[in-house]
Image (cartoon, rainbow, N blue to C red; front, side):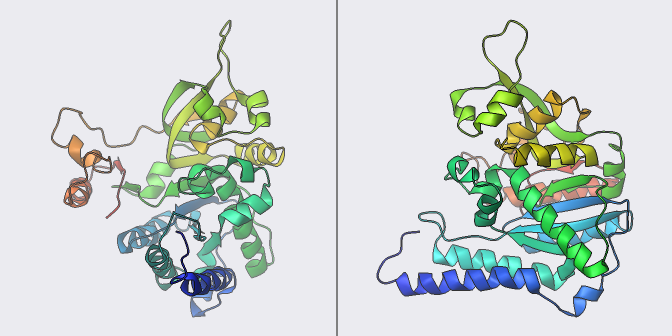
Length: 335
């Protein structure tokens, strides 16, 4: 937002509060810390749920996922703390986001929650300063860099709590507005042999519009090319539920540390394919017929379909599948 003389003092105050709030996320110690002080035993997969503005229902979903995945998997929450940006958030919107984020530690052990900012991502990867897109910020567009930073913070916190290093045994990353009408552990178990898992994988020509969202090193090393083709292509994928095997995660970290960065909708799948990792497509999402009335529920987030009751219709659709005992992935679950 733009600071005016009338709001300048308030803006500076909120900026200070943001800094204090982020510091509080890093150093919070409460009675809840003992809830899972001994968790994270060796050899378990990590499940990371990424969030920015969690609703009460999303937080309850996180609690349920944590319960369903325990004790076989460790679940952590990665919180993107907002920073003041011109024309992006109003003061009121920023305060609402912070209030919603504060609720996380009322329901979840603080040791399971880590936070990060776009500034920290740029600190870890200075090249991201050039690649930052105006819309929504770094973490929204470049998931891998945010995941890298959040995972490092989790590992540091785990070692501080237990005196042991976290052993990398693979990583699942979930968005906060995706849900599964069955047991999450059963879904994740289906893809135990894959190195990279995502949904709706497809080829896309590497156009100028995509090129500006990647570094030169990514373009040189990872853009794919068919035999005798004049144009390169990338693999585009949805990112609602993604898996990284331990070995693929290490390769991704090495690529980023070497200066290879790309918008995560095409960067991750393309790198996995180019390096020869085992890629599997997640096909567990609810199917929607474009001609059916129910398709309007699926597409309620689109600009031409924002009727107020669409969130409730999606929720009812999801809950009906749970009652029926039908395990299906749903997105977006923004109620």
